Each structure stands twice: as structure tokens, then as C-alpha cells.
Length: 229
Length: 310
Image (cartoon, rainbow over the protein chains, first blue to last red):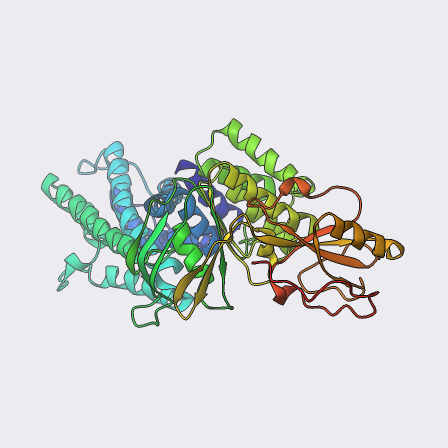
């Protein structure tokens, strides 16, 4: 399966279609960090929100770049379950690359600063919380991108609709005072939690929420792919 | 491998493409899937290969290693021939050294050596089809599924397909192949599955008593002696025709008149007979529908009407 993950990552990177989401991500981060310096944890929380649709889009591109018949060839060679898993793992690996860029980027443009006052978090804690926020957004974004992929939606129009609807709903239902926050992954609640002091139970709750949401969405993807080769 | 009570439709409210399909194929057996365009041949092959999942029923005892040659190879990929085949060999579980060996073997065998560094989108249709064939054979398949494997192939490669099939069968593999151009007459021992109106029926397998038709070309001046010699050897000369009017699905390779003679069939397509120097020999059919060109101007027409071999 590792070989299939590598093949799909290579296909994604060599076609040049990886450029569009990366540029969009950098542009969004540039706007985000253009406003001035912020504490790392708070800034990274917002960065994870901004990156959520970018990561989902990147996943859709990675899965769609492979021709349908090549995807079926892979299915014949490694089996249906491993073919699905290899696509998701390749998307997760590509997503980790984008997350790494997002974590380094603000330091290059001076968008974040180390602790300056007595109430500020230590630098290491800020970085760790930033990494955590991005890692919470990644599985949900991969799942959304997979649900929007051509193998499921079968047409470009439906694919874009699923992607856009998913990203917009995640933001709208994630606002404070939302009627059904549980329907969407906790990208906005995580950003809000990082703006102030974060209690351990809140952190655990957000982690569980993000993982359960991603698991449900990935199960839906697996179910949808049963009859969609 | 067996398909047990398999039904398939592509959409929940769509029409049934296949209904109540029960077919089986064992190790060392070949089956030819016949039928008109759009009748469900590819669907049946994809069910057997494991690309599609039956809507109802099940597929049991599918061998662990399946090679599938799709009808059209997906050439829109940013890899060279060598890199693609190596990656597919690694995906199928071969080690780096095994993958290199397998790729070298099939690249040489299928005449892909000079395309090794060429990117897939730049390949001609036939060369891309050869890459599709190669990827299915990198790991010796227990089941080889070929969807119209002759499409776009040149003469030499077309002759190679039955040879490769013969090797897979000899290694105990099963082979399923679809064809709508009569090329599968090159597989004389194969069973015939006919797909029509959603059902698959199996024609009676041809046994050892089956005959096949061999076309061969002889110099025009020596045709009478050649015919006499063939008859003396117990062969049944079906007809003599001029080279200028080749029948469909055959490729006369010389400029002299051709004769067609019926000879006893064999199960593996006699791969060793191919590629010899000398007068061109084109194994042709027992099916009258692919062998119907008139023998205009041919001397004498000594043979009777074409014989149905199976």
C-alpha cells in the first residue's frame, strides 16, 4: 500500500495541480498574517480555520488527478479497501506538507511573536497548540475532500458543490451560538478555545469531536465507494 | 472462480445490465466473452476482475493475483513507461529487485524498450495498450482478464497476445477475454460465453476434435501442387482466394494467393508456431462470419464451401 501512496503523491505533485491549493493557502495566510503580530496559539487557531477548505480542496485534487481507470487498476491489484485507504493516506501526507508550510510561514513574514508579557503562553506551548489545531482540522478536511472527489460525486459540478457546501457549513455552523455545532468539524470552536486559556477537558472534547466527525465522514466515503469503483 | 447468481446495475433505478449470471472458470481454462457492443461484456469482465461489485449475488474463489487489461489504457498520467511499470510492480507487492526484473522482462517482450523513457501521454494508442498489457503481467496472474486486448495493437503484438495467454494457462492461471472482431479465433481451445440481453450463456466447449482454419500464402505458380500436397496430408482445403481481397480480421502478409486449410485444433493456440520465417501463416477462424471474402479470380476453387470448424 505504501507503493500506491507514493504513486498517487507523485502523480499529484508532477501534474502541477498541487500548485493551485498551495498558492491559495499561501495567499490566505498572507492576508491573515498581514495585519500584525499575534501570539502563536491564537494565530495558528485562525490559520487552521483558513486552511480547512484549502486542505479539503487539495484532497479532492489529489484523488481526482488519477484517471478513473487507473484507480480501478489499483483496486484490482491491491483490493478495494486498501485502494481507498491509500488515497486517504496520500491526501493526509500531502496535507501534512501544507500544515508544515502553514506553521513555518508566519515566522518568515513576521506574523507571530514570542511571549512578551507575563500572561503569554511559553513559545513551545504555543507551537504545540498550533500543531494540534492544524492536526484536528486535517482529518476532517481530508474526509470532506474525499466525499467531494469524482469517485463519489461522478461529476465536476457536484464535486465543487459538495466541497463548497461543506466548507461554508463548517464555518456557519461553527459560529458561537450555532444551532447545530455538532454537525460540522470543530475548526471554529478550536480557534475560539485557543484565543484564551485552554482547559484540558475542553482540549480533549475538541479532539474527540474532530476525530468522531472525521470517522463518520470517512465511513460515509467508504460506504459510498462500495459501488463506485 | 465462480460468479454465483450475480446481478448488476450501475444505478439504483437503472436497468439491469446483467441478470442471474452463473458462470465459472477453473485454473488453466480460457473463456471468450462474446456479444454485441454495449451488451455488458466489459461489465462481466470487471465483475470477474473485482473492479465492480455485484449488486446481488457474489463472486467466489477469485485468485489472489488478478491482472486486468482495461479496454483503454489510462495514458493521461505524468509518468514515463518505465517509472509507471516499476511503480505498478511495487504496488502489486514485488520487491525493488523483482520489480526491475519483471519490468525489464515485459518491456523487452512487448517491444517497449525504446519507449522506456517516454511519458505515457505521448504514446500511440497501440503502445499505450501494450503498457496496459505489461502492467497486468508483472506478477504472474492467477486470473488474467483482457478487455478487447487486440485493439490498436500491431501485427507482431497481436500475435503475442495468444502466446501470453497460453503461458498464463500453462502456469495454471485462468483467462477471460472479450472480443468483438473475431480475433479470439486465435484461442481455439477457449470456452465461449455469450452475453445478450443481460444474460450470459455458455456455448458447448470445443473439445480435442475441434478444427481451426489456418490461412497461408503460397506462390501463385505453385498453388496446384501446394493444394495437392495439403490434401495428401489429410487437410481439408476450404478455398483459394486472391491476396487482393483479404477477408476482415486477417492480415495476409505476402503478395501471392492464399489458401485456407482446416487442421485439428489445440487448446493453447500453438504459440510456438508463430513468428517463424517463411510463407506467412495467419491462423484464422472456424467461424464462417470472419472468413467471407469471395475468391474472385482464384484459379479453380478446388475446395468446397467454407466449413464450420466448431
